[in-house]
Amino acid sequence: MRVVVIGGDAAGGSVAANAKRTNPALEVVMFERGDWTSYSA
Image (tube, rainbow, N blue to C red; front, top):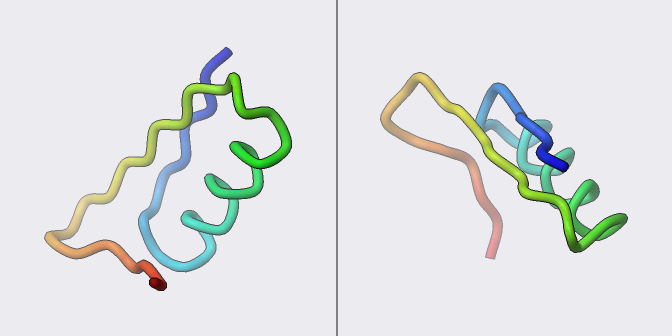
């Protein structure tokens, strides 16, 4: 199964991480239109 997240800001990253945590077998793809994505180390 694949989850597509549109938007690489904090909310998009949070959704992608939660989806992967909930089901590690998911393929998570995130699209961002700009040059930068938001992340936290």
